Amino acid sequence: MDRSLVRHAHPHCHVLLKVDGADTAFLVGDRVVPLTDENAVLVDAWKPHAYVHDPRRPRTIILALYIEPAWLGEFRSNWLSSGSAGFFAAMTGAITPRIRRLTMDLTASMVHAPLAVTDHEHMLGELMIAVIERFTEWRSVGSALRAAARAHSVDWRVRKAITLMRADPGAAIGSERLAAEAGMSRANFFRVFECSTGVTPRVFLNVVRLEHAVHAAVNTDEGIGDMSDRLGFSNQAHFTRFFRDHAGVPPSRFRTISRLGLVNAAP
Image 1 (cartoon, rainbow, N blue to C red):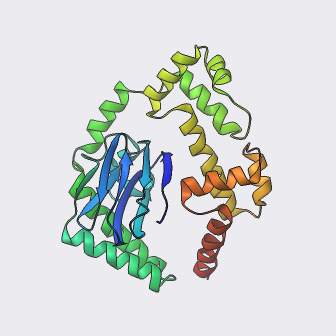
Image 2: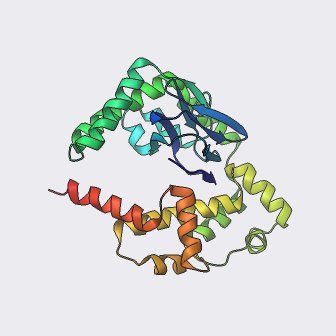
């Protein structure tokens, strides 16, 4: 990383581990959290965060893990709750020598043995078990978060707005229309939406747009301009900037790198 990323969120818990380069920091919620050789950054699902790059410092190489709850649930069923707020006990914590070693081993294997997918998955599993055992109340995390989820369930009117966003993320769905569809005033809609999801309607829509863009870049041959039009951007340059500000690289470069990985992994 040699540039900042905008404030964003996503439906996965997020683990950031420094590999090399300068110490750096992330903004998690309203707090600046350091990322160093000794400290990890831990972001709950839907927690707004941003990468804060200091241009006076060298770049930082980061192992950034976006963890699917269903994948974690294969290790322990209660780890399915990693998709809920409050999964991590804190936003940062001191890593163990084992976590540091597993981080470096996985990164080195990904770089120098890119075809060793089975080895990567095994090392990733070991790393995530070590991280969760270090930074969560992993034995009881599921029951506690289920109780919290019942107390903070998503309002049905917000679910209706989310359905509209997901059905057509490129439509000109303004906050006034979403509020009207939900049967609320604009101010009340914003309050209830953020209370239910942890993010504003705009941040949520950006998440949906990025999900669609990443899927199209990796799995289809759709042109970047067509992708931009379908997702509701006024021109391709705006879409490219949006993608780069959220993912770190332009969509064309993201596609090239991901396609190389798919080709190399093919039998």
